[in-house]
Amino acid sequence: MLRKVGRLFTIKTRFEAFLIIYALGLGAASRGAHYLTQFPGWGGKLLFLACTGAVFMAGAKILDCLKYERERREAADSD
Image 1: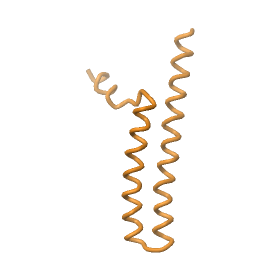
Image 2: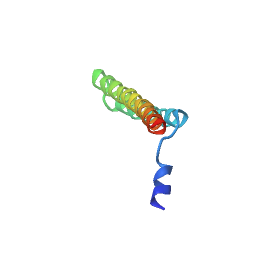
Image 3: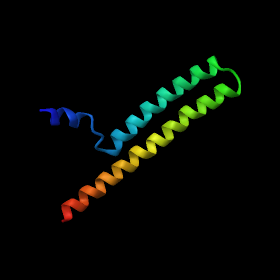
């Protein structure tokens, strides 16, 4: 039963990954906008860039992990 519930929280396709990356991007942009109003000037801009940069790195990691999992599954099937 726990395995079935755990599969709900597993990213299986690239489409699901892009949806999650999009949601992360929306949250980062919202947080960055708050930083711009809270910290005017260069500090707010740097924090905004840090938020969006974190989304780029997380998105790349998610997509790389999907590719790795697919290759591992194909290697296991061919053995």
